[in-house]
Length: 337
Image 1: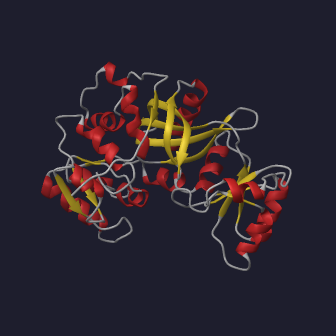
Image 2: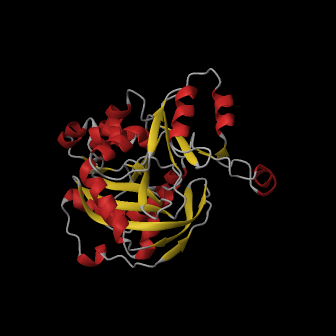
Image 3: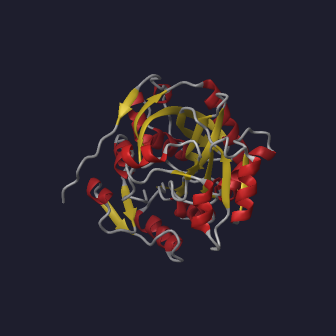
């Protein structure tokens, strides 16, 4: 398992540790990654954008007789997917989607276009590359009467995300909200951009309803299990309170997305309700999600199921039974070393 220092690494290690026949080797580019103190075997590896990354992981697979590589880091997905045949020859399965699918999923603009072309509903959107296009896009989408969102086509986490609105009380934001809120206005954005070159960005309608993080267990484009959880409370984009809801509309919607993108392994889909109540995609995480460990409380161990499926190991029917209605809260815990 790579990404041993990721926020969700401890929870995913907890999931993997539930299966007694698994031997977990954790890895990270940071020698002080927290996850190293939760497993018996830890290795330092190059970062995903390092030319030596793939060779290093392949060598580890041969040296340590690794059967499955489970990446948690977004930048590692494409290099690993591009060399799946080499890992197969080394006797290791890489739990990632095809490289073509990852390229689309990691580019929000391409993702929206791809799904729209295939008849899957997405938020109304425009793609912009400069302030003039941004002005035009906002006007076409109904600004300032309507609230919009903007985010880079390619980014990690919530970096670059803003809610564009003229309806927000700026004094209330100053006095009653913590620094780091996401609200801005179009004039503020234009002033920040100035004459600087900006990356391609996606401008879309704001979805005001409930938000769900959906964990999908996928097998070459077939969604074998889809588990929506409502995001009740979040801190820095990470769910700290939630509820598992058997929402058939969301399950069907995500099943269609998995099929069209031919996704594989553990995949996360973020959806949110529009003003009309219809659920629309926000983004896809084509990897295991950090909060996936919360599903343990609902009776399912999704990382273990993905590995068992990949290796052709038997899966009992009770391992696939979700205790719908389960609620959860999350907290921070220390590791001492």
